[in-house]
Image (cartoon, rainbow, N blue to C red; front, side, top):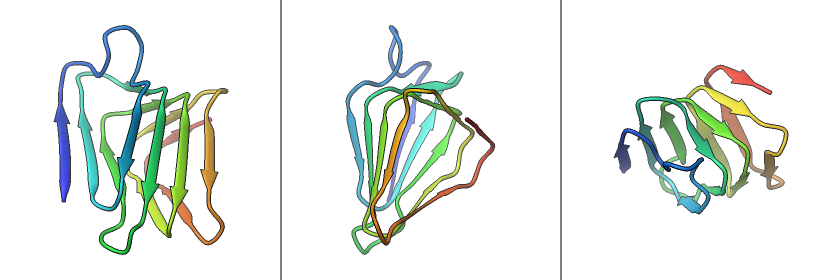
Length: 101
């Protein structure tokens, strides 16, 4: 299953500062420019399809939590100094796009 967001921007003031849960399936974010992930993204492999994120460049300054197995981010990524990534023991996060730390 894919949940697609087609928008000019995600948040007019800065970036997405809420919580998004990807429990298997794909989150596709298509914006006209990079979007900010300032909140919390939970990627959980719940035994169905591998959770993944695709689309426009994601500037990560918030939190990404990975649980339950394998997860993928298949877009360009920029990790800001405030980014916090936690990968649960036995889980894996594949970064399949260009990455800037």
